[in-house]
Image (cartoon, rainbow, N blue to C red; front, side, top):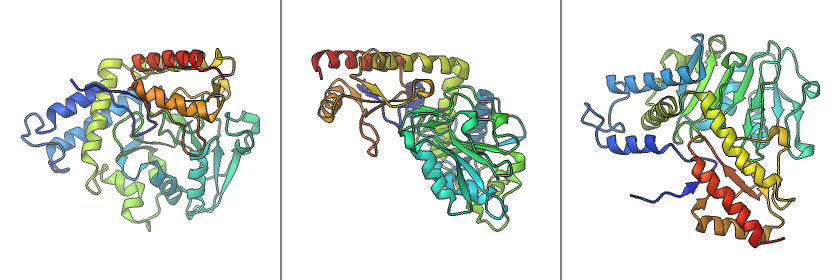
Length: 365
């Protein structure tokens, strides 16, 4: 059997072993089809069944109401940074509000500026993006086209514990890095979107959950491939979709339903995993310094620094020698980051926890 490392990559990230094994087993030929999923037509009954099953699984896991579309698109979250303002902001005569809690929210707002007026309803930059704003700190426009948040910032390791109250304005959320990690009250959102390569599948497909009335706002002069309404009408088959990626989303969501049970159970597992690492950080007497304020720490991306860069480099090198890989922080901030998405087994987190304690004892500052 091939030896697998514990992969703490922020994305593309670790996938559930049962899903990978099923894909491996059936890669040459799907049962009853005689051909691989990467060879069959996206118009075939077989693929139609796959994409419908993937959508049904998502609707079950997230309790998605009937008045929301589930779209399987391409281009990652970055395309949504532009596509959402193209569909909701351009020509509306309104501006859009962005709540900036980290690097990806900032990037989303910069892209939106190419399509219309935007404003920061709150920006945590001066504090180094360590927390989520309090309700009284938000300066929201009650006539905004939408309010955008990033539910979990992978670089800074900051996560919204709950949705902000934005009144009647549609709440739009980039949930790329905590999608399917916990229950979400979908009806609080106008749009919730996520690139798949953190918790839902491989890179290449982006899932967009969008309320029906917002679909109808898509301008008719948009190119079809940038138009939510066109994709909704075509049931995500406007063009050839990333068929293998959609198939993997089905397998991953099958795993969640079959082996985990529901997102409440997944959330409890994720809380346990994160607590193991944050406990080491908190008990290290400052040897490991967490970035995010404790009340807003991410359950998906545990970010921390060591006493100096020399020790950080040694930590990363020795961790890799122990089969604990991809622990370097984002190139823009440095440090260390353990991405512990749904598919990271408890054993991997326990191995990292023990390594962190051992490393501190052997390498005093």
